[in-house]
Length: 114
Length: 114
Image (cartoon, rainbow over all chains, first blue to last red; front, side, top):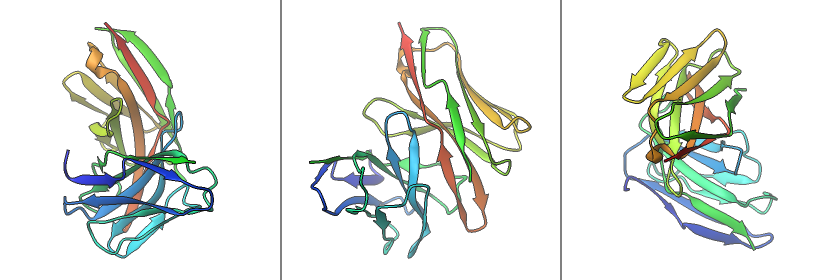
């Protein structure tokens, strides 16, 4: 299960705290994505990046921030402005920019609020 | 923007029976339709995909059909086996020159009973 690594596997957030989820890939993929998974709601796109130093908001970007300073890394910060952060977060990558590409997913991070 | 609806949310079949999962999409410009399988506790993985210039695609026991006029596509699994039990996600995307994004359906939990 190499290729795309997420850490930590479990994360707890206190009220008012920002937390950062790590996503690293060694596949030399151009594009990276963050999805949020809630029961019964499928996978909802938070942010995506087609190339280094560029990223776009997805459908539920409010309360989240990202950076793409290196090709292999796409960390997600869940800020205190995200009022309902408890969810399973999945990072993914694809070889080329564009949405018509196979996604490779990480193993996910479960974020819970204390 | 694109919206993808997936039905049913849960599906239970007997081993050896067929299973059908249906999805509809809203944006007629969508041109790529993948299906992902997520086994319990594991990451989603691509099982089959279809592009808008094709009406049907088969891979052993699984097949996908696309009706562009009606804007719906379906996953067909024949001779189901217990290891087919998982959550299945459909998705639709539009590919732009500068990228694009993949929008997922809500997921279908398939249970295959021995």
